[in-house]
Length: 128
Image 1 (cartoon, helix red, strand yellow):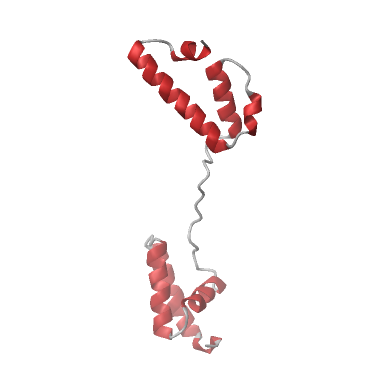
Image 2 (image 1 turned 60 degrees about the vertical axis):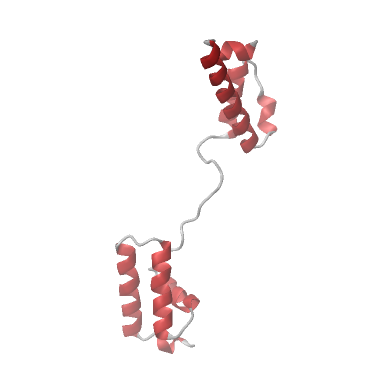
């Protein structure tokens, strides 16, 4: 359909219903349901309604998620490994962040279990 379906009154109603949902703290799925209901009522596509809400500067996109561990840097993991083994292991910076995290977590957990079982200082055990 063309924009002729989007009269001032229709746009005002769309904006009011959508911003009401946003104002209530509706999550992405609830906001999507509002868009779908509006599209069904107006006999247009969801994308058309979403585009109009974007043009009206009221649409709230889905929050982007990342799978990366943003909290700890590779440098921090390498420093932790250096502290654990008592030697500069700067060349480990070439490893992936996931691998570094795994190694640090593994050593920390393994040494904590061993020291708890034997009552020994974990850093001393790792230094040999």
